Length: 324
Figure 1 (cartoon, rainbow, N blue to C red):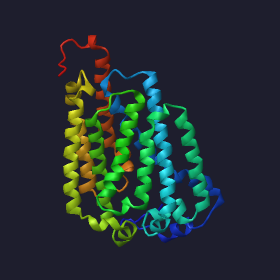
Figure 2: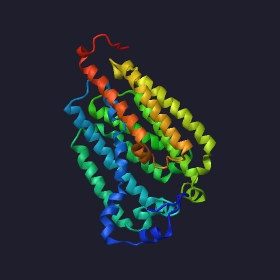
Figure 3: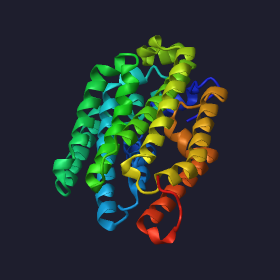
Figure 4: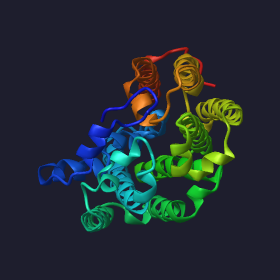
């Protein structure tokens, strides 16, 4: 997609996207489920495993099942939202090029894809501990309400989006048989609210077209969003600290906190730099997965968590390291 500095899609590309090309149908169906967004379903897996005693094939297979469930559920939501929002998306300088909004994928085909994904989700659910899959059901209901009502209420919209990530954490912990940490859920939830607010901040700079696409932007301003971003960033860091100092992160939580906090803070500050100084953050997944500094700090943080997990599983390796 060709985009100018003001995020306006050039006319030649729009004319090309408006043509229904049969040869592009398979590619457009893949784009409809947004595979680039799938990595967000891994959001809490490394943190949920930080307790140290849970690295085994049974736990990992259960968590893979949980990730697969949310990947299918999120794909269903993407398809349904694209169908429901196709008229609004045509008013957006970037989203107007999406498969349904541009007309490259018809509404009946998109609906059929959603039915197929729902069937796959149902089949996968019964293959695992299906009684634990209630966070997925909650996610689908919440997004149905979001699509038809909650997305039109300023502030509520970002809190609902963040709730989806909290539900991912809950399912990962339940499926893996890992004690659920309220601190971990709070940390992920606050960070998700912060990132959703960052997306709204970037959209505020797109002009009247973005306002028509998302009327709730009238309830936001950049100074207001900047203050909320800072508050949620502080809450996220404090909750992360509380998680590593809680019973869920025994016995080397303080060691993990000491080792990972520099990388957590650097990654957070780098995201804020992208958001506030560089004007990015419109696509959080792209921002967090493609910025080398953010990725490097995340990998180092995960490495430190894995190291302390090994220590927790083999206490004889450490001698006099402090525990709590």
